[in-house]
Length: 279
Ligand code: SF4
Image (tube, rainbow, N blue to C red):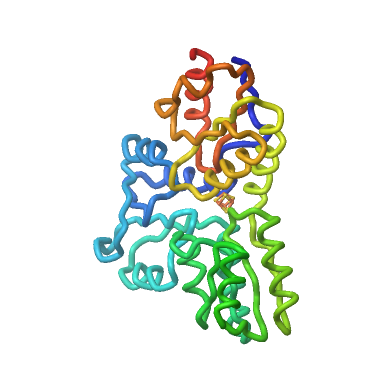
């Protein structure tokens, strides 16, 4: 089996930074999983005694707390500050940007429209910075349906995006708002790392017989990569690690493309490559 790696894949700047901060703070807790990759989280537990805590109530005063790459809500941050814990902020700067825009634009009277998944921690955090109720839509279709069902779009809106969304889909929503609102301000908050990884998958998936995307199953950017790969290569699969590989996928195939989400460490990608070579 010939293996082709995507031109860009794996750990992004924000994740590398967060992991370095965790390694420099042994014994700390991370508020929420630092990144969306279970095996890397386990490595930090085993080697650095850095554990995940999901509830601010369980955080003890004076504890070292690392804030995950996707950020936390304004309320949770306030609770931690009131507990006087030592905070190391690993929120990715690409996530801080939409948080700030949400706050500034809502304070100026714009209704913030977020293209994203309302249940994702990053979006929960961004929503908490808007001083008025934001609108969260996962697709253009969802926005159109809202309007068809009688929702009256505000006069002034400010559009931002979850950092991991696809640019074209963001532009479709922007076009809709521009043509339906009196004033629509558009802020591209999709991060470069996501964009570069997506373009690399788009290119590679049209050159191979099978695509394997390596990443956490709860990782939004990894799922986006799978969706993009499936457009050009029907036989595209998402695996967390080499144990998820199914030898039957490779029957009759000769070239396998491999890409990885922004929270996938190189050592897992390498293990997947080795396992595919031995199929
Ligand atoms: S994918 Fe982008 S936004 Fe998310 S941590 Fe990486 S650099 Fe930051």
